[in-house]
Image (cartoon, rainbow, N blue to C red):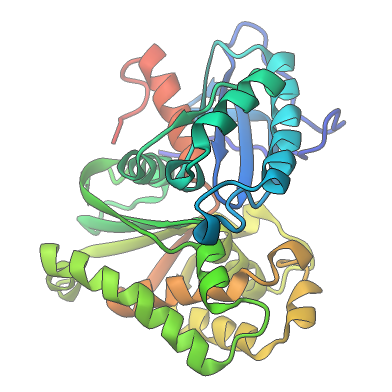
Length: 348
């Protein structure tokens, strides 16, 4: 199972944005995370959906949250500015159904209720704060089309800004979806890791400390389900969805600009991932910021993200990783469409 995903520009009024198909309903999904604000607007298509508009902006909503326990005024202002753009797109397309979710930053902020009220007042968007478990399941749902039937189990991980979700699931016979066995939410994302250990200049000792911090929590999940025993029998596949994972793929491919069609679904061997990570660790902040697949806004976050990913790969040495430039928003859209068209798409 796949879906028709047309790459579009995120700016309002983009000339190359696909037009809506008359008669087909429109759906929208928004994911407000600790670091990013992302929107997809889509229409049903054969075995999936067709994206007609999108938006993505780094807002760093959770900046300073770990120390203060609150969303800062500057972070709120940045985020509301992004949400206003999203609201404009939603009004333009008038979706039949839409779901706007917020994750870790809002789950943990003392002033979250006030923030949600402010968002409604200034943008009209009614944010729904979802649990870590639902976040993990939606991300796995969105990655479902990348699963293959040859391996009966899958580990799907999503490295966010404030947390990392790891989902352990059983793959269905058609390889398109399966049953979630369990998931864990690790309270380490790229923003939190960077604020705790630093992200601008990271030496080898600090990098290994970040890995150890994350892996200690992963080991508890391993102990509960003995995932390595299935891995040893060749029954496990792994999918990674996050800016970290897609950045690794972009760097590996030597892309002069990020290209989703070359990254999404790519299978990478752990040895190749290791070479890219070693290269990124050797770069200073300025060198990382000028890389076309990283940029200034993410230069201080990419190594903390690599450390979290490294911890997952070391804990479960599957050997190969499927790169996913998809996740929570796609999972929302699949569920919204499936609710209106039962039987069109199998649900996780």
